[in-house]
Length: 141
Image (cartoon, rainbow, N blue to C red; front, side, top):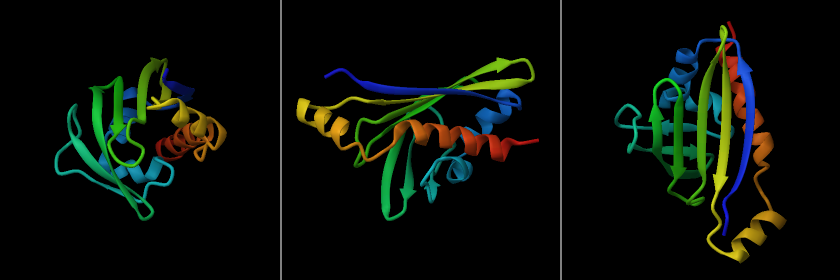
């Protein structure tokens, strides 16, 4: 099965370094990640680090699979939604930062793909838009 991906791009009026710092600080993740009630990481984030994320009663594990300061950050979920990947790419844009958020899902079977298409529980586009909206709010000058 081919992966299904969604991408949203917006510009935030702050430096690339500030955006990257907020995205990669586990203690701030609940401020911008929709539905996130908190995170726990024993070490600073870097490629290969796994950390726990709470969404209401559900706890899952994310593994950092992309970490190149200050331009890229990404994780793969190792819990219930095993295989979901989320990536952030940051590009300097004058005195602002263009933030690209991409969600990728690789269905494991045709039935999983059909179920995902027909009964999509996550509104991926609105989730990605919410991430960027939350980032804009907490990074506002």
